[in-house]
Length: 312
Ligand code: 13P
Ligand code: SF4
Image: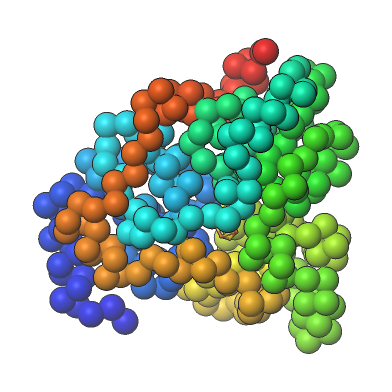
């Protein structure tokens, strides 16, 4: 239970600064409880374009706040901890991307949203785990080679599902790749034989192959609400369990691996949110020349008729 004094202070600050709080599904319970909107990367990107406020406090990791900044040049985007980065996003550099583009001049670059603004500025289209299959299936019609960056697990899953060979970068999410393993699936299946297993596509393919469904975090939340099953084993960062249990009190949820914790997501705390907003600290800024270029692949992903913007 959050202290009433803190809630009062937050309400006052939000009103004073005309601010809203967006939070990713992996955030700590105390952050989810104070957020105006909770979502996955795709929902949060969409929401960032629909907000009528001067300030967005982005409770998530840096690339997410940066995406909001790219989409909202006239708003102030604050991140409560400037060091909340995503190691996967840092596994590709601009220099390396430019080199691979030079070597594959005619290819389209599809970048997972877990990338920096400068990487997006050199990409043709972005995707998230919620729409990657849809985006790649649509690109197939252009008969182009695809460079998929930076997540090898998502890339591999998409490649297999869409039956489209791609050049896949060798990045990964340490939380999903290293802490959710096939043995966890075997153990969980034995312990909870009636439960459905849902996993995130950032998991290794050996894990994906053993699951009932592969979904983004937002996809899991939506599926579980409408599904008549009662028990679920959840293969993603454990922060999602708080939301799932809150939204579905009659259903049971078990983490596929209790070790799947993203230390960066957990850097955001209530006191940091208050401090950031009070002092208007940690403003996420993207240089205008990069922002303009990075805007295009994001907006292509968000537009329903994005295919027509892809010609190269
Ligand atoms: P979702 O888009 O499924 O929320 O996953 C994003 C992510 O990688 C957070 O780690
Ligand atoms: Fe990055 Fe993985 Fe953390 Fe998501 S869970 S922010 S991909 S390190």
